[in-house]
Amino acid sequence: MAYDIIVLAGQSNAEGTGLGNGPMFEENERILQLYDPQDNGFEESANGEMLLKVKRPWHFLIAPAKERRKDGHVYGNFALWFAKRYIDSGLLKKNRKILIVNAAVGGTGFKKRHWGRGDVLSDRLYEMTDVATSAKGSKIVAFLWHQGEHDAFENEGSDSELYEEYYQNLLSFFTDVQNKYSAYSFPIIAGGFVDEYVKNNPGCLAVFRATQAVSQTLKKVAVVSGEGLQSNNQAVGNGDDAHFCREALYELGQRYFEKYRQMTNT
Image (cartoon, rainbow, N blue to C red):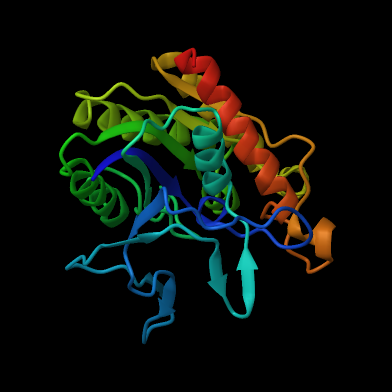
């Protein structure tokens, strides 16, 4: 089977965290996902340090793409709505399927060395993408990134220091992605944050400005805004101001796709 590959990377808003009312994604036989079935997340070590559970060796699976199910909840995911729009717009040719490389892990970032060069999640991302592209006739069509809440929250320096650090990290990461997969022509699209989280974490402004600056430095990189979209807290009153609610993730998927159409003239 040949795939049109959508690479999804970043932290929890890329994993899918939307609660409340809004469209529920219906499974589609033409939309698959490649994922790591081990229990991603964090666990506390003997000395109280929170360690990422993701470990080698990898064991990747391909299965129908679906919304994330955890702790009795079903969470919305913007990449699924992006994939649906891709099909509805007639971009998926006959006898092909979409394969979402689902490489996002909540609570991760550059500051704790998850996504930098040689770090575990970037290495895993490349191996997952290599597996996906090994299918004959397959191609990467989009790289969707949503991350930065972690780095904004963990910031201990000035806004200018945070801006520069995030800019350099993201620039290096996106450059590596483009260089490694230069055989394919695809846009990289990043997303902004929930308004409520920005209000409560001013470091988000520096991270978002840095992301915009990277999009102006590199070709085929763009950013969509999260402005006007509600958090889970605003939707269901659970105190979670960091994550887009279900309806907001649906809208975010539309924004990513519209940016994709602009960048690819499709």
